[in-house]
Image (tube, rainbow, N blue to C red; front, top):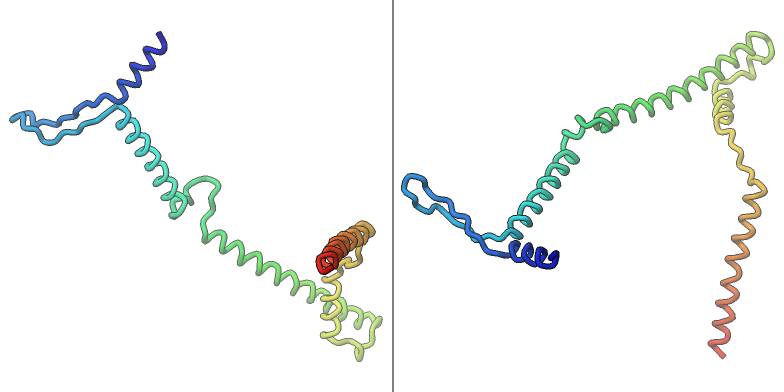
Amino acid sequence: MTKNKKKNFRKKLFIKNRLVILNEDTFEEIFSFKLTLMNVFVTFTLGGIFLILVTTFIIAFTPLREFIPGYSSTELKRNATKLAIKSDSLETALKQNEAYIKGIQKVLKGELEYSKFNKDSILAESVEDASDLNMKASDAEIKLREDVAETEKEPKTKSQDKKKSDKK
């Protein structure tokens, strides 16, 4: 019984029907289409997918995306980037000024002679302090480097042996 229902449904999908649009007063045929249920289903499905894609692209590539929660405006991003750069440069200038003020305090307290006090040398010291990075390799890193060096040497010796055997 289910097979008959499936066959009937399949037949109904492909039966040709005519859609006719008539003028009500004159019964004149304006236009007509030959359709099947499958054609109607495919047309509406493709139309829905097209509508969803168009809506998605309009929202994604126009300023409308700013109205969706979670998306920020491009102007806001640009301003945030500029402010981050400004704050970084102000931070370095502040460190340099603090180092200069500490140098002046040392001169005023008598810990440093005025003849040895130079703004350039103090600013150079503050730059050195800012770049206080640990550039020494750890034991694990040294071991990894040795392992990599050994693995790089092994294929070279094997490929050289192959070349020698090919030449003979």
